[in-house]
Length: 188
Image (cartoon, rainbow, N blue to C red; front, side, top):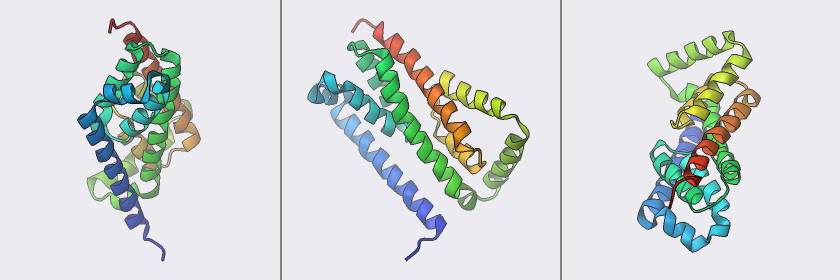
């Protein structure tokens, strides 16, 4: 039995929302510090990867994501390794949102949103690839805003993944390295 693309996209979106809700509930109930205590400091990089992955899947969990990053950095974990683990986790989440946009946002969108996606696609097609790369990198590297909507729009605009992904990964790495370095200077 084949699923209609719109139903499949909505089902995937529902599963993502469910995962995000479960992770947010876990972090808000138990707390990131107690989770790290339970798992152990030596596994802090794995914890950061998981928090980054799930934190990158929702605008609402970004506060927990940054709090966990600062906590682990101030606890003495190496900022460069935290940046590697975290940027990988966030970037995987960004790719999921890219594919949600690529596979179904155009079909699900209606009215103004659909017109905006079409206009954005046409506008991006006129820009040099290096410009698109620079804008995506700058957004991901120098704003603490979530990348999920940007990644979804780039997917819906049919921007090549091989252009978008390196810009997101490098941008995520830059932002996390800056925050982790700052966190390593905190006197906790």
